Length: 384
Image (cartoon, rainbow, N blue to C red; front, top):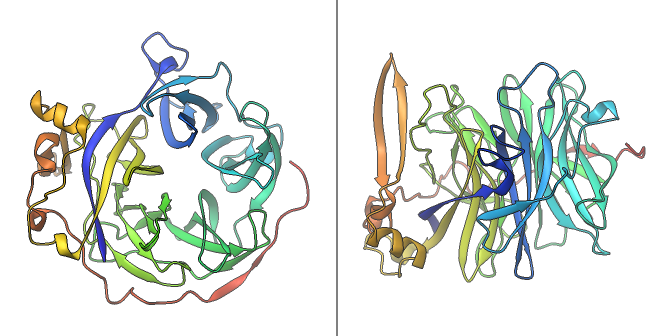
């Protein structure tokens, strides 16, 4: 079994989001980052703060970086709302995959003109500044709503698995569909996992990025929250064919620090991952407006009960030498009184004995459960 821990945190910036930039004062969410050669590429959801009555809930911008931290953005957005009613209210949550002929396929959430329903849409093109909206990929069945936050992975059996967030009964859940290729048709399955009544993720769930490495079970860094919508990032692992669950963290992998503005949302939300030289770099947002990335490492059972012996990441060593003390923690509002808990400095986190971390054991009632088929959802043929 492998468990996961955060080893370092870093700030992600956009050149036009500074104090005098075009996107100054805008909220930044859903950073989807990938690499092409030595270049890092980014799609990100941008929206005004505060959001006006007539403002879209999101516009998707593109940028590039040489280090994965400082991005130079294009002069115009890649995906904008409309003119079709399916996404006239906003474009959110981009996920990028490359098609068979090298074209970009961008899965994104389209919010309708009334801002009452979201559907999973796809745009395709030879480059990120020349995308054409193609079709509705997945719409909510009766009794469910707001299909969004697509995550795609190919299982050991060759089938593609599409994980998505949907709304049911005043809460968010994670659904799953399978298909023969990236364009479907998609067959919906039973939900891959659900909330835990006695844990931090007891009310809401949303998808996160999936990491697949040879010799290890695929792991999703998912998003979960309580009834107060305090979103945290956790992890869950699957069998290579995604047929059952093999492990799940008992505690959050990442808890947001106390917001500087008391009106800010208490949210950490995972969006994408890169695997480089064995390290996992997790890109996420804080407060629905700030971009960050975390260095995540996995540890096997042999690492439990003893101190870490792996070397620190070079950037973390530099921070320790300079006494960096940026907090990773949680601050809760309880009856008008703010109480801090689970606070750790960046300088300390890599040096804590393993047994003091939030190491996570198997959840017996979830392990090994297989997912039966629920029904079939086919692609809409119309072009949007």
